[in-house]
Length: 267
Image (cartoon, rainbow, N blue to C red):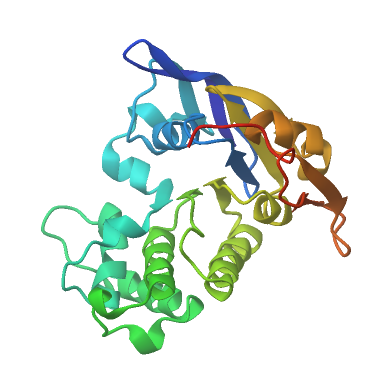
């Protein structure tokens, strides 16, 4: 179980995350939602260990994640971030193999087991035919698949995703989410996702958490939480919320564009 206890973070005098508490069981998925600047990414960075909270603790089972050394933490938590791939002239396989480094001691090379894990992930992410291709030659969707393959090859308990579907076409979005959902169901992977698309979050996530000014203003299942009034409170837009025809989870429809369909907001 992932337990976040009263976590807060300040930048200068501004509180960007304010006393967030959360518990996630193994194999659960949660979407973190809110407008820009609400504290979503800061919360994710604290869970990953990239940022230390000013107050509060983060536990995985009996281990305080904030006190683990980086290699030990990387065996527990992986982060999906396409920008980590960079433009270095590595092949797909070489980049994915880097995800096994948390299991290696200094100067140790990959074992047969490590290579087997990489082979399995290449197969599961449909990258086997591209394994010798350089990262710089891939499309955006392919790069995102490499990013998730590199994260999964760490064999983590928790996968953190920061806006994973941004800039991807519809096919690439659902391919990525399908891989994540498979690992959640088959491996018990816990997923924590920062996402802007409320409809995707409602379809994909077991639970959602809405942040506003660093505070949690709503948390629960999509059916329990997502409503037109909450969407207007968080985003300042008028919407219609209807049940999905197959799953029954909330889906958001925008009102037609009129002068009265949105509040005035500075971009």
